[in-house]
Length: 380
Image 1: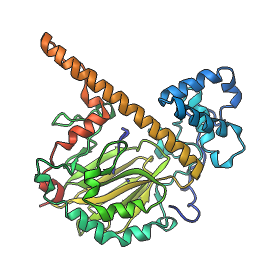
Image 2: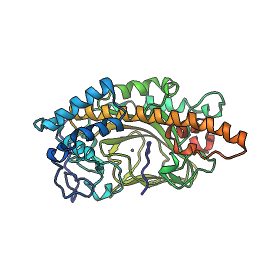
Image 3: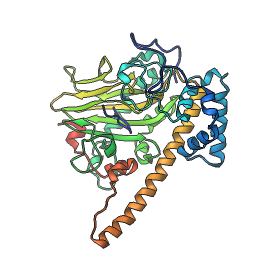
Image 4: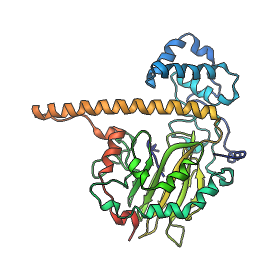
């Protein structure tokens, strides 16, 4: 199945639940036999492998020094707070990808951190923020409703179609901007946080929602309102990694039959207004709004997987931020080269070979200029 590489429809207290029946609690590397690569395996060409690793994240200067510190700590092998990062890092340094699933439903997820439990639906009682989140439901819904009418503006941005780069799917959008992850209906999003993209204006319109989100520990940095127009099906897919969980707070759900559902692995969750649910979106999942005339809108945000230690989260956050900064620089540079090539191609009467739909940041920015219809956002 396709992997939605950006985002898609998905502090902790007390022990986490056991893994689902029949699903293991440790991961293996792609093509491996379940045995972690040894440090000795990296020793002969260790420096070259480290340099390649640093280059892949764009590390230099202080960043390189910080990365060296983390690698050294991981390789010491006596820090239990880094026991999941260690096999992951050794695998990456040896030129492999951690993709072997812990659950059968993770097959197709592009990144699997070993030794993280793979449970479809998680018990919300294990997460201390859920009571506060559900208690804030009226305020969050009111802020959502205050956005109504913004779609008619041609000077301000708000909701935009969910789009991904062209390498993510073969379903090219009809308007030519990226690809879509749904069939039937329409899928639109109002981003609050997404990688290094600036959505400060969106956040400013939702101060109470942001105050609540900012109070939650171990958030991953993705947050948005997601609306499914009547008759929309988000097709089966995997999130980009298993190092996070996805939180949904349904805000507007059609009454009556179970029109709005989420399937994650073997679990089916029926959306109910004001009732939070949490799931692992590295498992194959899909979402439905089968109502013929009413929309479904949920608040979505991600949290780090509760099996990860604070040290592991700090290290993985460091890598993630570095990777996003590097990719943003690469995308910006490619865009400048493409703009120059367009000018030259036009002067020569040729065609531009650069595909802007392959640029993640370009697709997200271009989608801002596409204004969904009021019917798609708010129903009839």
